[in-house]
Length: 262
Image (cartoon, rainbow, N blue to C red):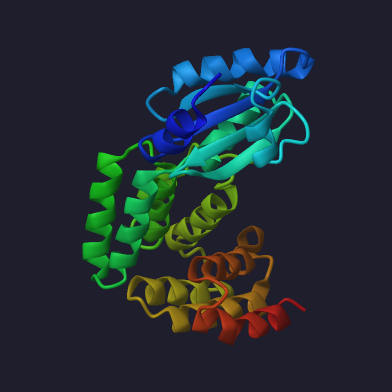
């Protein structure tokens, strides 16, 4: 029997604790147990595993409303922060852990991104570059930097998202980066009105005049919405995504954009 208060509740204030609620008679539990054990060894720097036999400690199972087993709960700072039931494959559990384990670096990034709002564009890029250099495997930081560089350094932004493919949670954001990089790298081909409008949008984005940029892009949609594989339409959507739904320019120009498509 385990000392639940000491091994789980108190210990989770130091390191996250994964509790495997199981029983000897449970077939799926016997399948899941070795998988969790392997993961616990591979990720011992991130979390600890505690196995609790529900037959031996039914009071704890009842406290945590264990209706079926196997049931796995992740404890952090004394409380359950995530859980799953059933014998999941190892890859699914790895993704689940990545999604739910506390991430001190993520909290640091959130704080940094808030601070960037009070910096000049050059300072913001420098600060985020430094963070990415210190945490090269932090995917969200890399994506944030790619978004920031899509206008000023499109080639570098593209390099940062080369490994993001369909099925990755960051795929949509990566596509927005690719679209904006494509827009900024577009070279004048002819004197067509749509090309002139996109060139003017490029210039506006480089100077931070986002309102003029979206105006020119919407005008480009009206001029030729199919240009370069629907680049004007895709660029407008990418900008709206980058700014966010509550941004004043998104709210102001979303309707004009929709009207320009028809």
